[in-house]
Length: 598
Image 1 (cartoon, rainbow, N blue to C red):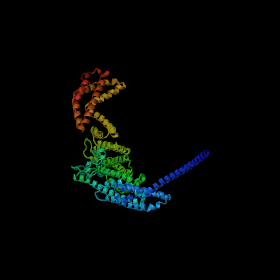
Image 2: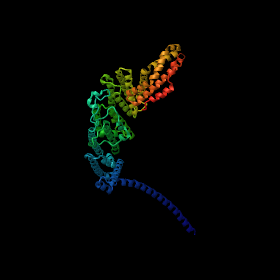
Image 3: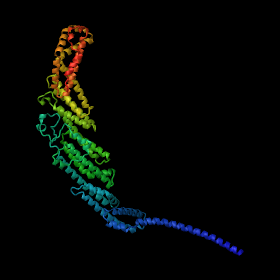
């Protein structure tokens, strides 16, 4: 029994050592498994990335580039090429086995892509092509260019140069022919150096006296020309020249300018976004690429504008063009496309000096205008002041949107010259009354045109309101003087004496006062009647004539009221002639009947 137990004990101890051995073996196997798994994941990724599947080879070699499968396999090929480059850098031996296969596939892919993109670029060159369609098609395959840029820079550069050369020529020829066709539908008669504000009507018979103004632009009047910078027209469809020629429609220069530059703005925005997207450029490099595509077109535009503006005397057209540029510049800033900024600035550098020069010519023409050359003068408004009013209100109303101080200054200068000129012409009339009628007619006409078109708070409106009011007051005194001058003079003298306290000096005036009281009572009605008729004949604007009559009658009532006051003073209070004085209220009621009902 003892022997059996000891044998059992011996067996147990050997089992314990076996278990220990098994544990050690298990740990060692575990470690080997982990190591193998780690190696396997590394190797399997390496093998997966390095192996070139048959499907990829057949697709790259045989499938058309436009198919989705080709694009997918191209992405895959690109990843493999990059991976092999990375592994070769780490000196992985297996890379050598697949490098030549990948190289051949890359060459094949590059060849197919190059042919495809070149074919698309050449398709732009076909006449009457809408090049936006192949451009949009290219954008779908922008990865092709990315692939070339990463793997075959020389081919990428070649395609980029081909694109730039092709598009540069297309834009230049399109805009060149569009511009020349547009200029054929401009108004036949345009302003020249004789069409200035201070040039007399007789100076150039052909221009102003032509009965047919169908094909002529108005030089000093805005009319509906301002609509070109309105929201509806500014971004409206561009003019189609052959349609306009068929229907014999003519346009002012600013409409042609808007159409030409809206086409430029539209194409520039689209082209800039395409270049950034397809050729993967940003910032200054995008701007440089855009300049190589559009540079010739922009240079041609500037040359055309320079040549046209040098010989242009239509200041409203030039000013509208400036405002079109300012608006287009704002539109592109809103779209966040800086492509044409420099061009807009250069254009403004051409337009502003010309506008200022034409304005200065007009100012000089009024300075040099000789009133004697106007021939027969009458008191109606002059055509020169009408031109000024129309022109000034046109410029002021356009200038409100993008105010410019230099323009304000030049308009102020023009206004001063016109005021001086009106005074010079007024001096040609012999009587002060005619001078005043002439001045009031001109100021009133300028004021009504300015208020109709420009804002009421403008400097010009304020200036002419003051002048009109001062001259009207003077004219009222002038027309009241012949019929009622004796009474007015007596009132003013007496009031001066009363103020000084010299009432006694009024005692010797009884006979004069009696004559004045009776004279007024017997003649005031006929005098007021003829005064009203005279005023209405003198002023071309009925409304203005009416307000002058009202002003004159009000002034007359005031003078008569003051006459009453003087006669109520002690030295004259007992005068029998006071019984013939007309009651003030009765006079007011009677005078109201004489107010014209316009």
